[in-house]
Image (cartoon, rainbow, N blue to C red):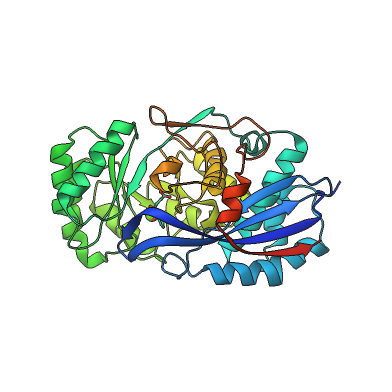
Length: 371
Ligand code: OSB
Ligand code: MG
């Protein structure tokens, strides 16, 4: 039986992060994105979230391209091709090249609606096995090392299981050494967001003395070959983020030895079904995975929690509490971290209650499409 979807609503949202988030490619504070509502004939609503930013610095997608692709291609495909299960969407959307964040946003809303109609949690619908997931925190580049050390101390105090630091040339080895000296025992890692090249091999070798869990995406966003060369030269495990858009990328990286760990983001790989396929491959091949983040609202965060409940998510995810990002989230109760864990909701679908007043307050415009 086809999934009952009567209409799709695209809400253009604008929320302001509590603190600016600095990376090797720039600083972000205002976040625009879409909340996708898939509404059935009984009025039940499934929610999805688009994760592209306003500018194409992380991948080529943006808020505007997400709108274009959803409105002009994906929603018409859905309208003309009823599906029986959300897993069918990845094939339905396959004729549209890439644009993975647009696909994932719409697919996420259909997954949530489907799980609610089946009266099961999204985590259970995906095959999740955990009742809580381990979480870490990703800290943007700070103006001074002292400010960074204070932030880390506060997050460690809050219970976060792993600290990830953004690095870039000029703000890397010395900074990490200072952190390692101040916190000899914490699980620590660095994320370069593609800020280095193979010319930096000697420089990056200095990481090996710092007992990092991993270095995330040191080299180019579109590279798999050079990462293999770098991984042969350093003992710190490499984790790929930007280079992974599909299971085929994971297979290539695995075969070439480009990384030892995969950061999975459903937005980057085109949805939860694709993310689960990558998970299954990594489980079979003994490759640890963890759930990345895109500074999501509570809705996108709830999808990430469901995904991270799958068995091979054996490293803490970038799934921090709502209060690490927002003064006011759009779900109530908000996501909270307790002893370094976030609970996996067992209520139907994403299992969080959308705060309709907050949702309205951050909505800039709404577009509705009948299926
Ligand atoms: O590289 O993982 C990344 C945020 C925006 C874009 C890319 C990345 C990140 C993060 C933050 O590291 C993850 C989060 O806390 O949501
Ligand atoms: Mg990253």
